[in-house]
Amino acid sequence: MRWRNAQQDLAEAKQKGDADKIAKRERKLAEAQEELKKLEARDY
Image (tube, rainbow, N blue to C red; front, side):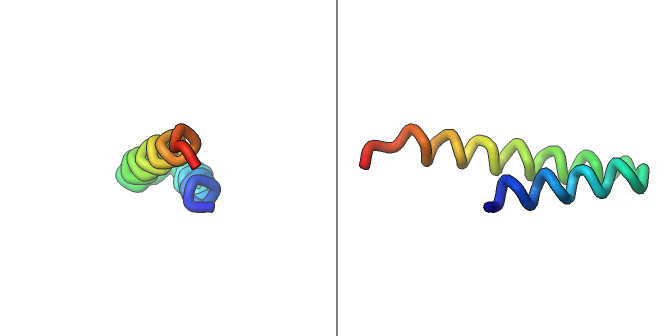
């Protein structure tokens, strides 16, 4: 869920052309993707 929100935020920032927001959203997306990888790799 968090990863999807980060993707949407990044797409909106790119549409608006705000470089600072784009960089911030890209970092948040990367963090969310790392978190997703860790969760997927966990043993249940």
